[in-house]
Amino acid sequence: MKTSDHNQSESGRIVRAAGVVGSATVLSRILGLVRDAVLAFLYGATPAADAFFVAFRIPNLMRQLLGEGALAAAFIPVYTDIRDREGQDEANRFSAGVFSLLSSTLLVLTLLGIIFAPQVVRVIAYGFEPSGDIYSLTVQLVRWMFPYMLLVCVAALMMGILNAHMHFLTPALAPALLNVSIIFFALAVSQNLEKPILGIAWGVLVGGLLQILVQWPPLLRRGIVPWPRLKMFTPGVRRLGIMMGPAVLGVAVYQVNILIDTLIASFLPSGSITYLWYGNRMMQFPLGVFGIALATAALPTLSQQVSE
Picture 1: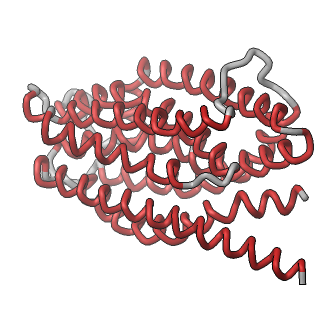
Picture 2: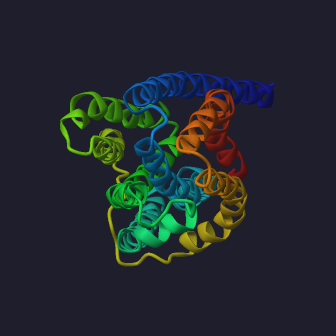
Picture 3: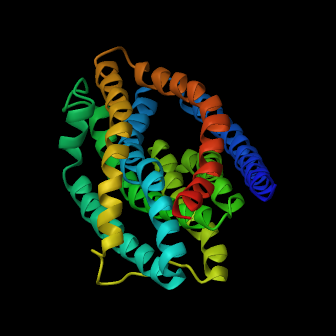
């Protein structure tokens, strides 16, 4: 009976957590639809919109590879196991090592991305003529938005720590702040600029920063804020790297398909990349609300059961 009651309790906790994550995800996805509607109204399927969505693809790719997707899938099981077996202090050292390694790696990648932005754009949008205005605008947008990769990956790490401690509401609401920021900058800032689409890029940066700031208080209250440390390559970090390999490979397959779609669309008439972006966004809506919500809620509990 005790085992049955325990299983029912765990199942109920997963369902409640999935409800919290699902509700917050619905809010974020609705705001995402509003964001896309605002951008479609202001910019339509124009060369400026194509340039923005190409530039936005790049940090989103790295976010999936190194942030929310692969990192969360590998981080939470390792963090939970270390906490349960070796104590919270050791888990804090592990998360600090991951934070230090992740942030330093992404800082280098961000600097390289800013420096080699023209070459990056040629790789993913070869159909853009290097002497054309859309190409130069895309390069400019890439340079503005590359730091978003660093911000959102750090936010994803914070999200993983909070989820491992069964706190789901704040991390689930954090992505909504990106949409709020873009909507605000689109309506209140961008129209006053010589190149209005640059205001949307600024909104992306501020949105990434807000995702970190909103998760800081609950981490601080629990004393689990990941601070930088020099000793990064702990056994836990090495174990995390091994576990991330298959997850990165799985995420990369889908993201490579998206990049190939973008590459092909860059040869098509103006607006094709924008149409592709909006179509993909509609397809992702049910996946985010149902599939990701359940997976996010179940992973910490399953990780704890494996550790026990």
